[in-house]
Structures are given as C-alpha cells and as structure tokens.
Image: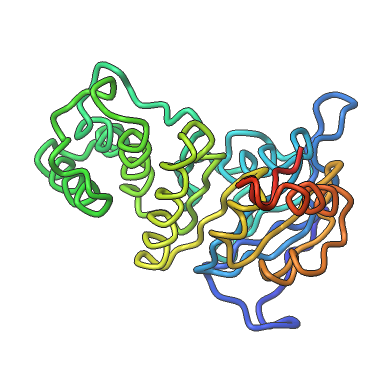
Length: 265
C-alpha cells in the first residue's frame, strides 16, 4: 500500500501539484519504470529527459491514464488518480503523431472531446474557436489535417488537448516530426503558451537543447529510474548521470559545426 503524503508535510503544497509516489510499471517480468517518486510543482514546465527505453514515455502515459500503474500512486488535486479513466484525471495528452482525424475539419477535431461529452454543437464550436485563436489557427478552422503544414497540425493538436481545461498538459516528443528550423520556432510558441495559461506542462524529449530551451525543471531518467532532477541550468551545469555527461561531451565536440548539445540516445 502506498501512503499519500499529507498536505503541509515538508513543504506547502498546491492543490494543482502533481506527485508520483513510488510508481512502478511492469510488462510481465520487464520493469519499464521502477518505483519513481517526484513532485511536479503547479505551473512548471518540466521535461522528462533520457535515452530511448529509459521509461519516460511510459511514465507520461501512466500520468495520462493510457497505461496502468503496476504499483504506486499518482496524486493530483490531493487525490490518487491512478485508477481513474483519462477523461476524469484533470490531464490532457498531446501525442507524438498528433492523431488528428483526417476526415474532420480542424474545428471539429478540436471540438471532438466536447462532442463526446454531449456538449451541443454551437457551444463546442464556440470554445473550439477560442482555442484556435489561442494557438493562432483561427483562419485554418475549416481545413482538413492533410491541408496543414507540420507546425499547423501541431498547433491544432495542442488546441484539441487544451479544450478540456486540463490542470496538466502532457506532451510526448511533440517536436520530433518537425524540421530543425520549425522545431526551434515551436519551442518558443510552447513556452509562451505555457506562461500564458499558467498550467503545468510535462514534456518528454531526448534532446538536451530542447529541454534546456523549454524547461524550468529537468527530470533525467535512465534505466527505469530518475537519476537527477532540478532546475534546468543546474542539471546541465552539474550533470550526475552517465547519459547526460556523454551527450554533453558530444555536444562540446560538435560546437562550431552547428550541432548544439547533442541528444541523449
């Protein structure tokens, strides 16, 4: 049994803090995530950083409710949401593939979750228009996904995730399908949007430069556990994990050839 920390213990907590308490995920005998605990402060842009297979995407999907938790608790709003369905958690997830319905207009894609909740057409379209305005996509509301660029598809997927008014937005490598120039531009847009909304963003990446550009806090995962966590500059200036040190050395070797800091692989 997992003990849920009481409010006021150690540090003052916000009702919108997200806490992982001894969270484990197993696939048969394989351990994808091993007893991790971490507090994500409300309103923080956090990046889960680590090599492929380290457990970061499994962690994100457990928070979202798209993977079951083998052991542990996920605390949001002062309660354990680990057994709740995704729609009742107060989270929303933006998938790596964007997962837009190809036969629906952008407006209908954004409004889809409200349609499933029984919201009438006029109201859901009104809110969809507000979300599209927020991400700069109002003029594309009547287009189909195939008529959008990669960056426009990403913004449409972002509006669809935000329409449910989540406390926590979860992003699974949202920039990986974009070309390098657009990726840098979208980093700025994501950071600006998070500041405007004031909600928690948790963003999975294996790119050190991406994490450094976006994150208030970086959580480094490796071999199914959290190896280091802290403010972004602090983590990069004093790395304590082997993958982070290796990637830093590769980045240093590549400076002057426009290669940045390198990825963690």
